[in-house]
Image (cartoon, rainbow, N blue to C red; front, side, top):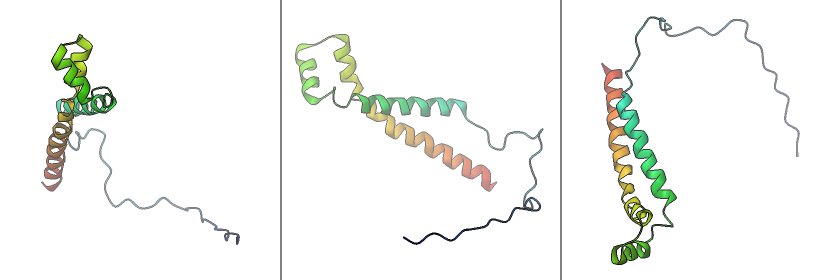
Length: 108
């Protein structure tokens, strides 16, 4: 294998010129954060994580057994976990709104 040639990097003599004006410290936020939407996106993420974590426990056989013979509270919770896939479209709807609102604020 051939050795790589040595690269010499020249040190900067002066910092690069800024093409934009830095923001003032007293300026307001550039784009407002929607704390409630951040909260609901977090809830949707947790729904997806719990759904995937219980993927091998809440099997169709388990659901049939719970529906046929009843079961404990934990069995019913595992049956309810199968509906947490709804977090995916929920997350994408909220994220789509956030992206479009951000784009709109940058265009105006």
